[in-house]
Image 1 (cartoon, rainbow, N blue to C red):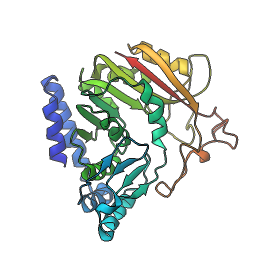
Image 2: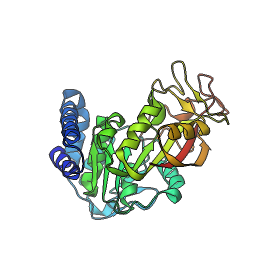
Image 3: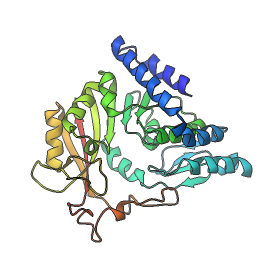
Image 4: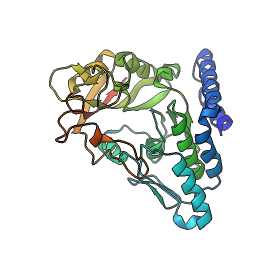
Length: 323
């Protein structure tokens, strides 16, 4: 799994500077050595125990990503799959149906996808990156648009194992997950046609620097598909929380829509369009059987106007821009 994914990616990188390719390979090896540490065993065990079957039927066109039908496995085989999926909890993005097992993830991720879909550039035959790809829900949705290749990057071992378990069943060969972060994306210089950059910007203390790195990774004329947590307001400003925002310590700049536009402009993007704004709610992000911890309703007050810290409640800002 590791070797095949690594070699598949490296064969795609012939257009990069040799020093960039070498650095990417070194990072992949370093991250995989971390994966093999004892602390990661609880994620590796269900991956290897569960990855025994291949789905005959897949369908990524609906809101639920469907991998296999219930009838394809007997009861004991489905129990192996169910146990492996459960052992990899919590599931943040979804939903999935895996051999008839319904994985109701924390986020109804299809809502975000459906907001973007009418505005997406042509992805057929293109090279795409999904930054912070989580368990790969959006990678499977992108795969339905016939790209040449999709690279998902996320440094989280749990998500790496979730994706690889799912794709061991689905068998989609042009999807590739590597344990890299957005801070490495500039190494893929002028490599991607489209970069999906969703739910990432506010987690970095220097959003302008990160956007410039994303721009570096895009080919001329390439597109960034950006979605971020934000706040309402007409002025181009960003909230900078003292310690936490909606209980999350790793939140830095939470921008207004016009601030998002200015971030993109100053990072060098053009043709910037804000395509959607909406308030977050427990209809879209909530606790489930597959994510039993606190979720959105625990992060805001009762009327959904402020976070528990007293800051303005979040909205989501959707934008598309071009290099």
